[in-house]
Length: 365
Figure (cartoon, one colour):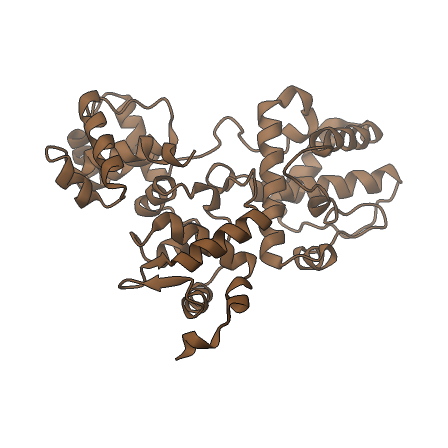
């Protein structure tokens, strides 16, 4: 048997990617297939993936590994299975073994999960922020040394046009801009617990200096690429959180963020439903107006509850029934809707999904 080929030492030797997979599978605990992680990492904007991200306390990983492939995830699961760290129930649903939980604890203690990683909150702005920051840093540095000819590190037209427009707004104060940008970066990143600014700084370009690629930076830092990738995002997400919370302290950096007032946008279809709800329409009326199924509109309401903190779910689930559903969910310690409905017999699946959407992730905090 292949399983017997692995010693205890082999079981303990896993990658950081394996550690993250074990962590996520431990949270899901066999209630979803391995492919739910694929959709999570890819950032699939389906109601199931969005709700599961919050329900299982995995929203920080949403859209953080868009380069992952199904085959790569299957291969990782096969290796973990061969090492007896996970076991398969049915249809690619995995549980951690006792050994798997022990290995996970050891590796999480040695290499913790990134403290500020928040893919759900920042997935729609992190890439744009990085593009603008890296290009503005390069341009400012070169202009400071009166160097007008260089190869820009960012090629996307929208980004280059934005930086040109921003510099034009600054007028002749190019030296001042470079100094302000440097000081804000220093203020934002210096002496911060839980982040390593070098993981970002080594990728910045400037006058007669080309920043490293993500692969080169990982090699320079002596880190597994996946570890480097998540911790690079950790720095970006920390910066976004810090800048949005303290915009007056970071007048230059805050300009690099698109629409910081709306961090997590609803999907376009849900946005239309939200507008109709705001106009006082019922679910049935919205389904009729939009020529969509009631179930689809209910999916939208669940998505709104996940994203809009001030959205009141009491018109859809009275307070007493919310308590009943939460009590049932805690009692059975499962995220299977049917099991919760069997316990809270008068609740509909929609009501259960809505309550879990609003309160499900609280248990992980």
